[in-house]
Image (cartoon, rainbow, N blue to C red; front, top):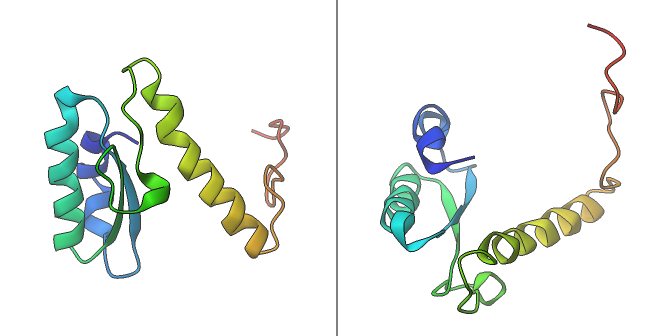
Length: 105
């Protein structure tokens, strides 16, 4: 979800139980993303920052050309969700409540 979309709704629901991962993104939007990170923290939420200057080693990215950045940004999140699913005994990619194809409108 974009930072702007997060500000227009989900930010209102942030509390101590919230953890949001924020991507630094391109230089043109990095300042906005850093402000969103701070706003989430001020609202009581936990945060992860995926960037070249990330404090968590697994989320610290190498300098990358802008075209390749989205691939590197999403990899730590995908690995984290797979690990969390496995820990919870959930098979990644399996739907629990709905089929993959809509059969009922």
